[in-house]
Length: 117
Image: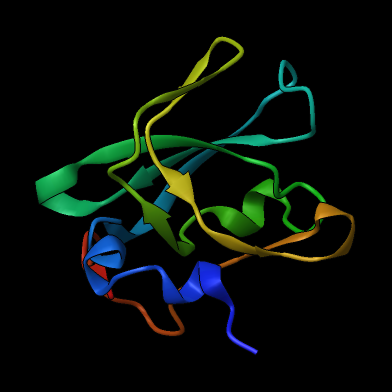
């Protein structure tokens, strides 16, 4: 049986989502968030610079384990305000039971800002 939601998408729709590799350079607590989260600063290299994101990844990741980790993020969504924080990229991860998120990462070091496709 075909999944109509999937078959109605076009390759050009996928190409509109700008996913890039970036390195987490700072991690801060985010006590104002409704659900436990960190404030991340991510370096996407010379072209895009640094971006900020709020990520609900406190169940699986400790702050110190995130520093220097390369992650995949969407960098062309509109800025989203979360409390008093403005998130200008969306860190990607797989969502398991109980909203336990596993980050999408690179299995080897690569240049910050490279496109994912």
